[in-house]
Image (tube, rainbow, N blue to C red; front, side, top):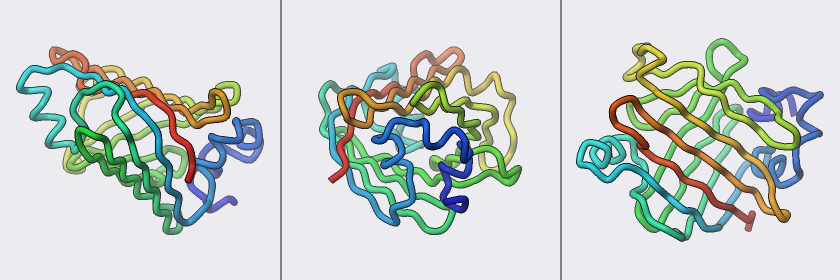
Length: 178
């Protein structure tokens, strides 16, 4: 399992302590499909809508059905999330430093440190780049992201707020693996 992305980044001591739905979602299956429901929030002014469109993020809406597809190829994962109000695709892989997760959304790459918090994963944003160029950390505002389990389901909470812009996107909900 050492070459599988999430177990390698979380580490062999902490990985077995994660909730089973979290392990299944972030484990080593070459292909995974899941479905669920998400609440998507975000600022509704034109600049926020434009930025979401550029990054391939869904538009706000309550109770959106979500379908997730994960394709794994070596240490790289492609996540495609189909929301009722948009489609979001990102590529996840180990950063060049070998200890952080790199998530690419359109022209932006986000670098996370993954930590086990109880039986959940806490994603801590450490760096961001636009078209490969590093940007000051302050530009990326606050990004709160957790992967956990509730009632036997995989649960996610993401909330991204940018300076002057406010809440770019927040989505939370649950998924069940098909």
